Image (cartoon, rainbow, N blue to C red; front, side, top):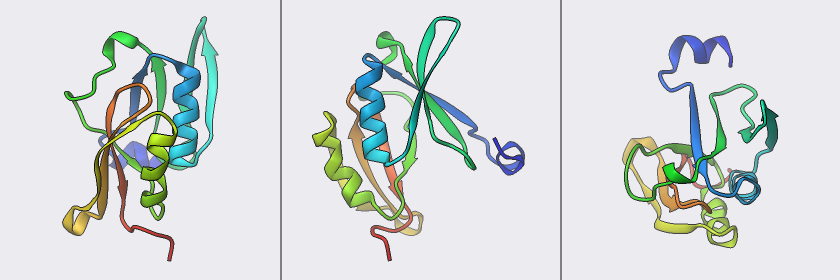
Length: 130
């Protein structure tokens, strides 16, 4: 985590519960267009989402905590490629709950269920690469 993130961001990490780690790794790598590194610590496997300069998170096998309609809503950055990312959601086993829509001066978002059934928002300041 960078000093900027440590000093200025309130949310510094997130865990996304998953039932099937390999399926979830494939989903996030493809939809977010990032690397997701599978790691193991003390016999527990998890997937770390690429976060070289920003806040990060990981995929943690915890089937009981997977929820689709309740709890916190995490916004994941797909800036400049939100339309493509939303198209990939269903291809990768997820569901689009609400397509891309404008959220005023805060950009665009789409609400989805990931391949594991978690409700998330895909977020972009802009819709397509300019």
